[in-house]
Image (cartoon, rainbow, N blue to C red; front, side, top):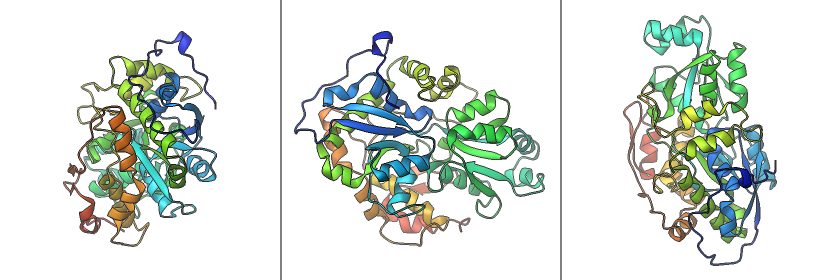
Length: 393
């Protein structure tokens, strides 16, 4: 999909926030960016509609993909230059999980939070009646079926972590299905699923259609967790360092714009278009808003910028996904998680881009306390963290 800019008829038409000079000729000026129909594709859509790339010498072409597997395949084939993608997908490709091993690059974090776990009405009722998930699942009389969006992706990791914290073993006590985000609600409505973990607006749509209820937010699993990233093959960065840096600058401007007053409601109306998500804008806006209603007191809002606190591609956060791959038997235990993450996450490129926009740099390390009380604060402690779970493979 090549989305023409509709600026002439939109209140989105405002000038970019900064126009720094380029330090080198762009190796490539037309970039094809992939995305999946999710609300957290908002930075890419805003960047295209506002043409933030023009100030940095770039023209963006947005290419909607039907699934995360399609994003992976088109990144690897070179049909896409970069993409809005699952953090864990990038790390899985790096290790050759579920596809050919390819050296990958995380350029920046696009958002934090904004995902949820929704149960079928039957299971949500049983949970409300019996108080614990194991007791509720026992009433089904069979193994439950839970869906996520990609085997090494964020939704699989949030779902597995949450289930384990509830006393449910995600590899032994349930069946796991991989379903693209836009197909989740239909599968739930057809009674094929007992629960799912997916990004918005699909949890909101399940509730609006009366086929499921949101029972947990991924920000309860890991408060302010990294979610989607801007990613590409590492050889793209090597061959196009100036273009890659200009792309990070462009996306930082888009993320900063999304923090502006009223801009999330504005972008929700554009995301509702058939070219992007294609559902009611009110459903998108309801959980895209940075001030969530009192009815969801446990959730943290989706964050896109927060003065740059969202976007730094902290290697320690990437290394966390490797600990979970080990936990669930996707990889054998190894001692080089910090080194792997340092190669994937392009921190120097990000620092250069942020400096040109006067975007503050976030802390290199930050502690996070998970739903089970475990604390993650450093990739240097990855080995102990990965092997410290009672519920594991």
